[in-house]
Structure formats: structure tokens, C-alpha cells
Amino acid sequence: MNKEFYVGWGTLALINAGLAQGKNRSGLNWFLLSLLLGPIATFCLVTSDKK
Image (cartoon, rainbow, N blue to C red; front, side, top):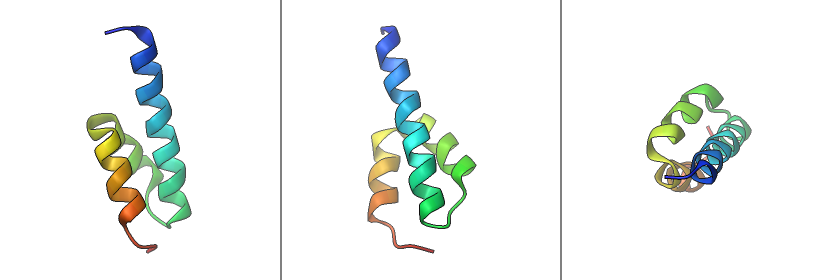
């Protein structure tokens, strides 16, 4: 795997943390979850309701 893949994955995790905070959820938890699940975590976050 190349370096761009890791940069993109990390950027997605940061974006997910911001989305989570906007929905009154833990940004750190979603950041860590996004590092593991990536786009799947994004889909779960986008489809969830605001807390």
C-alpha cells in the first residue's frame, strides 16, 4: 500500500470526528472507530440521528 492511502484514511477519520461532534457524539471514539472501519463508520455516522 502506498502513502496516499494512509493519508486519505487518516483524513477520513478526522472528518468523521468532526461530523460526530456536530451530532453531539464523541469525536475521539468516532475517530478511533473510523481508523478501523473507514467508510463503513462514515456511513453509520451519516445515517444516524443527532443525539
